[in-house]
Length: 147
Ligand SMILES: [Zn+2]
Ligand SMILES: [Zn+2]
Ligand SMILES: [Zn+2]
Image (tube, rainbow, N blue to C red; front, side, top):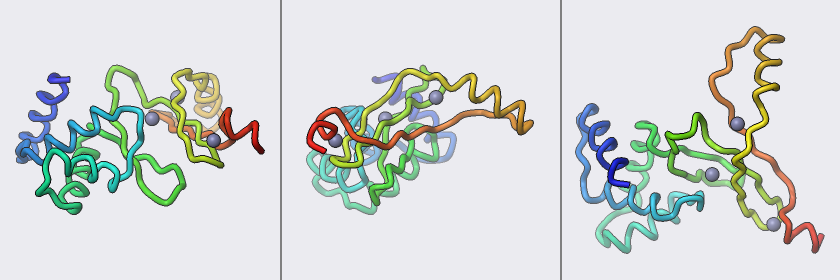
């Protein structure tokens, strides 16, 4: 946890920014809610509990900055708003997501069986793949039963 804060401090400093209490509170909130894929408004509501004086615009700008610094990533689940999650730098790349079309639940998938696919694409399109992002749309276990 604190390692993350230290590395963020360095990244911010390189770009001429400071780790202000508002930025710190925003990152803390995302760290405390890992796996929740929150929207800007949802993050704002929680950050307000730590920093009552913070504005939505500040949270919005902080999220953009953290995204730019590769600390968090923006994901679009096609539900009309951008959501954010923490980047896990111990993994090579971000996990994949299962998105329920009925209740909107997002499930994280850790298995990655896409190496073969990547290899085939690289050969067939002579394209060097660096990363991929995959979203699966369908019905979760609960919604499946009441369809
Ligand atoms: Zn569902
Ligand atoms: Zn996720
Ligand atoms: Zn993958």
